[in-house]
Image 1 (cartoon, rainbow, N blue to C red):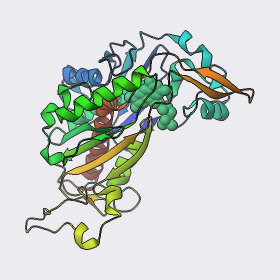
Image 2 (image 1 turned 180 degrees about the vertical axis):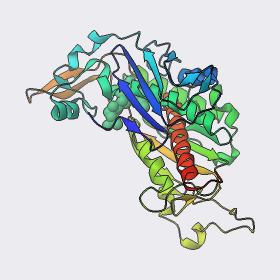
Image 3 (image 1 turned 45 degrees about the vertical axis):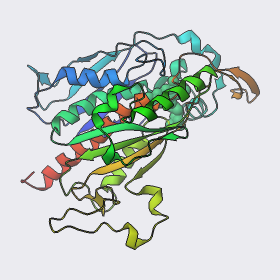
Image 4 (image 1 turned 120 degrees about the horizontal axis):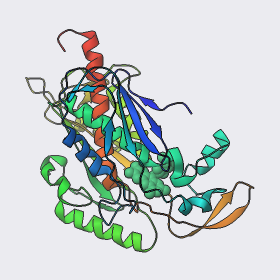
Length: 356
Ligand SMILES: Cc1cc2nc3c(=O)[nH]c(=O)nc-3n(C[C@H](O)[C@H](O)[C@H](O)COP(=O)(O)O)c2cc1C
Protein backbone atom coordinates (compact mmCIF):
# COMPACT_ATOMS: atom_id res chain seq x y z
CA UNK A 1 0.00 0.00 0.00
CA UNK A 2 1.68 3.20 -1.17
CA UNK A 3 0.79 6.80 -0.30
CA UNK A 4 1.43 6.75 3.45
CA UNK A 5 3.65 9.85 3.40
CA UNK A 6 2.66 13.52 3.26
CA UNK A 7 4.76 16.64 2.63
CA UNK A 8 7.90 17.48 0.67
CA UNK A 9 10.37 18.73 3.31
CA UNK A 10 8.31 18.51 6.51
CA UNK A 11 7.33 14.93 5.79
CA UNK A 12 5.11 12.62 7.83
CA UNK A 13 4.85 8.87 7.21
CA UNK A 14 2.17 7.07 9.23
CA UNK A 15 1.59 3.40 10.00
CA UNK A 16 -0.89 1.24 11.85
CA UNK A 17 -4.44 -0.04 11.87
CA UNK A 18 -7.40 0.62 14.14
CA UNK A 19 -7.21 -2.72 16.00
CA UNK A 20 -3.49 -3.51 15.60
CA UNK A 21 -0.97 -3.11 18.43
CA UNK A 22 -0.32 0.56 17.76
CA UNK A 23 -0.41 3.41 15.30
CA UNK A 24 2.35 5.92 14.83
CA UNK A 25 4.61 7.77 12.48
CA UNK A 26 7.95 9.17 11.50
CA UNK A 27 8.39 12.90 10.89
CA UNK A 28 11.33 13.49 8.61
CA UNK A 29 12.65 16.99 7.91
CA UNK A 30 11.52 18.72 11.09
CA UNK A 31 14.12 21.43 11.70
CA UNK A 32 16.53 21.08 14.65
CA UNK A 33 16.30 23.32 17.70
CA UNK A 34 12.56 23.43 18.37
CA UNK A 35 11.95 23.24 22.11
CA UNK A 36 8.87 21.05 22.23
CA UNK A 37 5.88 21.66 24.47
CA UNK A 38 4.79 18.04 25.06
CA UNK A 39 1.67 19.09 26.96
CA UNK A 40 0.50 21.05 23.91
CA UNK A 41 1.05 17.97 21.70
CA UNK A 42 -0.96 15.76 24.08
CA UNK A 43 -3.64 18.42 24.32
CA UNK A 44 -4.12 18.30 20.53
CA UNK A 45 -4.48 14.52 20.75
CA UNK A 46 -7.04 14.90 23.52
CA UNK A 47 -9.09 17.16 21.25
CA UNK A 48 -9.22 14.35 18.65
CA UNK A 49 -9.49 11.30 20.88
CA UNK A 50 -12.58 9.10 21.03
CA UNK A 51 -14.81 8.99 24.09
CA UNK A 52 -14.36 12.69 24.93
CA UNK A 53 -18.11 13.53 24.96
CA UNK A 54 -21.56 12.01 24.46
CA UNK A 55 -21.67 13.06 20.78
CA UNK A 56 -18.62 11.06 19.63
CA UNK A 57 -17.72 7.37 19.49
CA UNK A 58 -17.51 5.75 22.94
CA UNK A 59 -14.27 3.85 22.23
CA UNK A 60 -12.03 4.71 25.20
CA UNK A 61 -8.44 5.38 24.22
CA UNK A 62 -5.97 7.46 26.26
CA UNK A 63 -4.10 8.26 23.00
CA UNK A 64 -0.87 8.86 24.86
CA UNK A 65 2.00 9.52 22.47
CA UNK A 66 5.46 8.05 23.10
CA UNK A 67 8.42 9.51 21.28
CA UNK A 68 11.32 7.24 20.36
CA UNK A 69 13.77 9.42 18.43
CA UNK A 70 14.65 12.81 17.02
CA UNK A 71 14.33 14.66 20.35
CA UNK A 72 17.11 15.26 22.90
CA UNK A 73 16.39 16.95 26.23
CA UNK A 74 13.07 18.19 24.87
CA UNK A 75 14.56 19.77 21.74
CA UNK A 76 14.24 18.47 18.15
CA UNK A 77 17.61 17.31 16.78
CA UNK A 78 16.77 17.45 13.06
CA UNK A 79 16.79 13.65 12.84
CA UNK A 80 13.63 11.59 12.19
CA UNK A 81 11.07 11.88 14.99
CA UNK A 82 9.59 8.43 15.55
CA UNK A 83 6.49 8.08 17.72
CA UNK A 84 3.89 5.51 18.72
CA UNK A 85 0.36 5.61 20.16
CA UNK A 86 -0.74 2.22 21.54
CA UNK A 87 -4.22 0.86 20.80
CA UNK A 88 -5.69 -0.24 24.10
CA UNK A 89 -9.47 -0.50 23.70
CA UNK A 90 -10.10 -2.66 20.63
CA UNK A 91 -13.32 -4.70 20.55
CA UNK A 92 -12.65 -6.66 17.40
CA UNK A 93 -15.56 -9.09 17.73
CA UNK A 94 -17.90 -6.14 17.08
CA UNK A 95 -16.63 -6.25 13.51
CA UNK A 96 -16.97 -9.98 12.66
CA UNK A 97 -20.23 -9.16 10.82
CA UNK A 98 -18.29 -7.18 8.19
CA UNK A 99 -15.62 -9.83 7.57
CA UNK A 100 -17.36 -10.88 4.36
CA UNK A 101 -19.82 -7.99 3.98
CA UNK A 102 -19.08 -4.54 2.61
CA UNK A 103 -20.61 -1.62 4.51
CA UNK A 104 -22.28 0.75 2.00
CA UNK A 105 -20.13 3.87 1.44
CA UNK A 106 -17.23 2.66 3.62
CA UNK A 107 -13.84 1.48 2.31
CA UNK A 108 -14.54 -2.28 2.75
CA UNK A 109 -15.35 -3.02 -0.91
CA UNK A 110 -12.54 -0.99 -2.47
CA UNK A 111 -9.85 -2.31 -0.07
CA UNK A 112 -10.93 -5.91 -0.77
CA UNK A 113 -11.00 -5.44 -4.54
CA UNK A 114 -7.65 -3.62 -4.61
CA UNK A 115 -5.62 -5.75 -2.17
CA UNK A 116 -7.53 -9.04 -1.91
CA UNK A 117 -6.87 -9.03 1.84
CA UNK A 118 -8.37 -6.71 4.45
CA UNK A 119 -8.02 -6.14 8.17
CA UNK A 120 -11.73 -5.53 8.71
CA UNK A 121 -11.39 -4.99 12.51
CA UNK A 122 -12.47 -1.42 13.23
CA UNK A 123 -11.97 -0.56 9.55
CA UNK A 124 -8.24 -1.42 9.69
CA UNK A 125 -6.10 1.13 7.90
CA UNK A 126 -9.16 2.95 6.54
CA UNK A 127 -10.16 3.93 10.09
CA UNK A 128 -9.77 7.57 11.07
CA UNK A 129 -7.66 6.28 13.97
CA UNK A 130 -4.75 6.89 11.58
CA UNK A 131 -5.39 10.63 11.87
CA UNK A 132 -4.07 10.66 15.46
CA UNK A 133 -0.57 10.43 13.93
CA UNK A 134 -1.34 13.45 11.76
CA UNK A 135 -2.38 15.35 14.88
CA UNK A 136 1.01 14.62 16.52
CA UNK A 137 2.88 15.88 13.44
CA UNK A 138 0.57 18.86 13.13
CA UNK A 139 1.13 19.81 16.78
CA UNK A 140 4.90 19.81 16.16
CA UNK A 141 4.43 21.77 12.92
CA UNK A 142 2.37 24.34 14.87
CA UNK A 143 5.28 24.82 17.28
CA UNK A 144 7.69 25.32 14.36
CA UNK A 145 5.42 27.98 12.79
CA UNK A 146 4.45 29.51 16.12
CA UNK A 147 3.90 33.03 14.74
CA UNK A 148 1.15 31.75 12.46
CA UNK A 149 -2.32 31.23 14.00
CA UNK A 150 -4.45 28.33 12.85
CA UNK A 151 -8.00 27.98 14.13
CA UNK A 152 -10.60 25.53 12.86
CA UNK A 153 -14.16 25.23 14.11
CA UNK A 154 -17.42 23.46 13.31
CA UNK A 155 -19.40 25.76 11.03
CA UNK A 156 -22.35 23.48 10.25
CA UNK A 157 -24.03 20.21 11.21
CA UNK A 158 -26.70 19.05 8.79
CA UNK A 159 -28.73 22.18 7.97
CA UNK A 160 -27.73 24.07 11.14
CA UNK A 161 -24.99 26.60 10.42
CA UNK A 162 -23.29 29.68 11.87
CA UNK A 163 -24.90 32.65 10.20
CA UNK A 164 -21.99 35.10 10.80
CA UNK A 165 -18.68 35.85 9.10
CA UNK A 166 -15.69 34.33 10.91
CA UNK A 167 -14.45 37.85 11.77
CA UNK A 168 -17.44 38.17 14.16
CA UNK A 169 -16.59 34.99 16.07
CA UNK A 170 -14.50 34.63 19.21
CA UNK A 171 -12.11 31.74 18.58
CA UNK A 172 -11.50 31.44 22.34
CA UNK A 173 -14.99 29.87 22.51
CA UNK A 174 -14.19 27.00 20.13
CA UNK A 175 -13.22 24.66 22.95
CA UNK A 176 -16.07 25.77 25.21
CA UNK A 177 -18.53 23.17 23.90
CA UNK A 178 -18.46 19.55 22.70
CA UNK A 179 -19.11 20.40 19.04
CA UNK A 180 -16.29 23.01 18.81
CA UNK A 181 -18.53 25.78 17.46
CA UNK A 182 -17.64 29.30 18.68
CA UNK A 183 -21.25 30.52 18.43
CA UNK A 184 -22.86 29.19 21.59
CA UNK A 185 -26.53 29.30 20.52
CA UNK A 186 -25.71 27.48 17.26
CA UNK A 187 -23.51 24.99 19.14
CA UNK A 188 -26.44 24.01 21.39
CA UNK A 189 -28.66 23.37 18.35
CA UNK A 190 -25.94 21.31 16.67
CA UNK A 191 -25.45 19.16 19.77
CA UNK A 192 -29.21 18.51 20.11
CA UNK A 193 -29.35 17.56 16.44
CA UNK A 194 -26.52 15.02 16.83
CA UNK A 195 -28.10 13.57 19.99
CA UNK A 196 -31.41 13.07 18.15
CA UNK A 197 -29.71 11.51 15.11
CA UNK A 198 -27.68 9.20 17.36
CA UNK A 199 -30.85 7.96 19.10
CA UNK A 200 -32.13 6.84 15.70
CA UNK A 201 -28.88 4.92 15.08
CA UNK A 202 -28.16 7.33 12.24
CA UNK A 203 -25.34 9.77 11.41
CA UNK A 204 -25.06 13.29 10.02
CA UNK A 205 -22.55 15.37 8.04
CA UNK A 206 -21.14 18.83 8.67
CA UNK A 207 -18.54 21.40 7.71
CA UNK A 208 -15.42 22.79 9.34
CA UNK A 209 -14.06 26.26 8.62
CA UNK A 210 -10.36 26.95 9.10
CA UNK A 211 -8.72 30.38 9.34
CA UNK A 212 -4.95 30.86 9.09
CA UNK A 213 -3.70 34.27 10.23
CA UNK A 214 -0.27 35.98 9.98
CA UNK A 215 0.78 34.06 6.89
CA UNK A 216 3.72 35.78 5.16
CA UNK A 217 3.39 36.81 1.51
CA UNK A 218 4.99 34.37 -0.91
CA UNK A 219 4.10 30.81 0.17
CA UNK A 220 3.10 28.44 -2.63
CA UNK A 221 4.34 27.74 -6.13
CA UNK A 222 2.41 29.29 -9.03
CA UNK A 223 1.69 26.33 -11.33
CA UNK A 224 0.96 22.79 -10.11
CA UNK A 225 1.88 23.31 -6.46
CA UNK A 226 -0.41 26.24 -5.77
CA UNK A 227 -0.90 26.87 -2.05
CA UNK A 228 -4.63 26.20 -2.25
CA UNK A 229 -3.96 22.97 -4.19
CA UNK A 230 -1.65 21.81 -1.40
CA UNK A 231 -4.27 22.69 1.22
CA UNK A 232 -6.96 21.03 -0.86
CA UNK A 233 -4.98 17.79 -1.13
CA UNK A 234 -4.28 17.87 2.61
CA UNK A 235 -7.96 18.31 3.48
CA UNK A 236 -9.26 15.86 0.88
CA UNK A 237 -6.89 13.23 2.32
CA UNK A 238 -8.85 13.29 5.61
CA UNK A 239 -11.35 10.42 6.00
CA UNK A 240 -14.94 11.25 5.08
CA UNK A 241 -14.11 14.58 3.39
CA UNK A 242 -16.28 15.27 0.36
CA UNK A 243 -15.57 18.91 -0.38
CA UNK A 244 -13.03 21.74 -0.09
CA UNK A 245 -13.51 25.40 -0.95
CA UNK A 246 -11.38 28.42 -0.09
CA UNK A 247 -12.10 32.14 -0.15
CA UNK A 248 -15.41 32.85 -1.89
CA UNK A 249 -15.45 29.19 -3.02
CA UNK A 250 -18.55 28.03 -4.84
CA UNK A 251 -20.36 31.31 -3.96
CA UNK A 252 -17.81 33.16 -6.10
CA UNK A 253 -19.17 31.37 -9.14
CA UNK A 254 -22.44 33.30 -8.74
CA UNK A 255 -20.77 36.75 -8.55
CA UNK A 256 -19.63 39.38 -11.03
CA UNK A 257 -15.97 40.38 -11.24
CA UNK A 258 -16.69 43.93 -10.13
CA UNK A 259 -18.26 42.63 -6.93
CA UNK A 260 -15.70 39.90 -6.42
CA UNK A 261 -12.46 41.86 -6.87
CA UNK A 262 -10.44 42.52 -3.70
CA UNK A 263 -9.39 46.15 -4.08
CA UNK A 264 -5.91 47.00 -2.79
CA UNK A 265 -4.99 49.38 0.00
CA UNK A 266 -1.74 51.30 -0.48
CA UNK A 267 0.14 48.92 1.89
CA UNK A 268 -0.66 45.88 -0.27
CA UNK A 269 -3.45 44.58 1.98
CA UNK A 270 -6.89 44.30 0.39
CA UNK A 271 -10.22 45.88 1.35
CA UNK A 272 -12.08 42.59 0.98
CA UNK A 273 -10.62 39.09 0.95
CA UNK A 274 -12.77 36.95 -1.32
CA UNK A 275 -9.49 35.53 -2.65
CA UNK A 276 -9.07 33.79 0.70
CA UNK A 277 -5.50 35.01 1.14
CA UNK A 278 -4.18 33.26 -1.99
CA UNK A 279 -3.78 34.72 -5.48
CA UNK A 280 -2.11 32.91 -8.37
CA UNK A 281 -1.39 30.05 -5.97
CA UNK A 282 0.72 32.31 -3.70
CA UNK A 283 -0.19 33.66 -0.27
CA UNK A 284 -0.81 37.43 -0.33
CA UNK A 285 -0.54 38.05 3.42
CA UNK A 286 -4.28 38.25 4.09
CA UNK A 287 -6.08 35.58 6.15
CA UNK A 288 -6.29 32.21 4.45
CA UNK A 289 -9.69 30.69 5.08
CA UNK A 290 -11.33 27.57 3.75
CA UNK A 291 -14.18 25.17 4.41
CA UNK A 292 -14.12 21.39 4.45
CA UNK A 293 -17.28 19.27 4.00
CA UNK A 294 -17.57 15.93 5.83
CA UNK A 295 -20.12 13.32 4.83
CA UNK A 296 -22.30 11.50 7.37
CA UNK A 297 -20.48 8.47 8.79
CA UNK A 298 -21.15 5.36 6.70
CA UNK A 299 -21.70 2.95 9.61
CA UNK A 300 -25.28 3.50 10.70
CA UNK A 301 -26.58 1.42 13.61
CA UNK A 302 -29.57 0.28 11.59
CA UNK A 303 -30.42 -2.57 9.25
CA UNK A 304 -29.20 -1.93 5.70
CA UNK A 305 -28.87 -3.96 2.57
CA UNK A 306 -25.20 -4.66 1.78
CA UNK A 307 -23.15 -6.61 -0.76
CA UNK A 308 -21.13 -9.60 0.44
CA UNK A 309 -17.93 -11.07 -0.98
CA UNK A 310 -19.95 -13.75 -2.79
CA UNK A 311 -21.77 -11.06 -4.76
CA UNK A 312 -25.06 -11.43 -2.85
CA UNK A 313 -27.18 -8.65 -1.40
CA UNK A 314 -27.71 -9.42 2.29
CA UNK A 315 -29.24 -7.64 5.27
CA UNK A 316 -26.61 -6.18 7.59
CA UNK A 317 -27.13 -4.69 11.05
CA UNK A 318 -24.56 -1.94 11.82
CA UNK A 319 -22.68 -2.56 15.08
CA UNK A 320 -19.75 -1.30 17.10
CA UNK A 321 -18.84 2.12 18.51
CA UNK A 322 -19.06 4.84 15.89
CA UNK A 323 -19.16 8.61 15.61
CA UNK A 324 -22.66 9.93 14.88
CA UNK A 325 -20.94 13.00 13.35
CA UNK A 326 -17.20 13.37 12.70
CA UNK A 327 -16.82 17.15 12.80
CA UNK A 328 -16.10 17.72 16.51
CA UNK A 329 -13.17 15.28 16.36
CA UNK A 330 -12.07 16.42 12.89
CA UNK A 331 -11.44 20.05 13.96
CA UNK A 332 -7.92 19.29 15.31
CA UNK A 333 -7.23 17.08 12.27
CA UNK A 334 -8.01 19.97 9.90
CA UNK A 335 -5.72 22.26 11.93
CA UNK A 336 -2.96 19.61 11.93
CA UNK A 337 -3.05 19.15 8.15
CA UNK A 338 -3.08 22.94 7.63
CA UNK A 339 -0.07 23.33 9.97
CA UNK A 340 1.87 20.64 8.09
CA UNK A 341 1.18 22.33 4.74
CA UNK A 342 2.30 25.74 6.01
CA UNK A 343 5.42 24.29 7.73
CA UNK A 344 6.33 22.49 4.51
CA UNK A 345 5.85 25.65 2.45
CA UNK A 346 8.00 27.70 4.80
CA UNK A 347 10.83 25.15 4.53
CA UNK A 348 10.50 25.16 0.73
CA UNK A 349 10.67 28.97 0.73
CA UNK A 350 13.78 28.84 2.93
CA UNK A 351 15.46 26.69 0.30
CA UNK A 352 14.77 29.38 -2.29
CA UNK A 353 15.87 32.39 -0.29
CA UNK A 354 18.28 33.10 2.56
CA UNK A 355 15.94 35.77 3.94
CA UNK A 356 13.50 33.09 5.24
C1 LIG B 1 -12.67 11.94 13.07
C2 LIG B 1 -13.31 10.90 12.21
C3 LIG B 1 -14.03 9.88 12.82
C4 LIG B 1 -14.64 8.90 12.05
N1 LIG B 1 -15.37 7.93 12.67
C5 LIG B 1 -16.00 6.98 11.94
C6 LIG B 1 -16.77 5.97 12.56
O1 LIG B 1 -16.90 5.92 13.78
N2 LIG B 1 -17.36 5.04 11.77
C7 LIG B 1 -17.26 5.04 10.41
O2 LIG B 1 -17.82 4.20 9.75
N3 LIG B 1 -16.54 6.01 9.80
C8 LIG B 1 -15.91 6.96 10.52
N4 LIG B 1 -15.16 7.93 9.88
C9 LIG B 1 -15.10 7.95 8.43
C10 LIG B 1 -14.32 6.81 7.80
O3 LIG B 1 -12.99 6.78 8.28
C11 LIG B 1 -14.36 6.94 6.29
O4 LIG B 1 -15.65 7.16 5.84
C12 LIG B 1 -13.84 5.70 5.62
O5 LIG B 1 -12.47 5.59 5.80
C13 LIG B 1 -14.10 5.69 4.09
O6 LIG B 1 -13.45 6.77 3.50
P1 LIG B 1 -14.23 7.93 2.71
O7 LIG B 1 -15.46 8.24 3.50
O8 LIG B 1 -13.25 9.08 2.75
O9 LIG B 1 -14.53 7.43 1.34
C14 LIG B 1 -14.53 8.93 10.63
C15 LIG B 1 -13.80 9.97 10.04
C16 LIG B 1 -13.20 10.96 10.80
C17 LIG B 1 -12.45 12.07 10.14
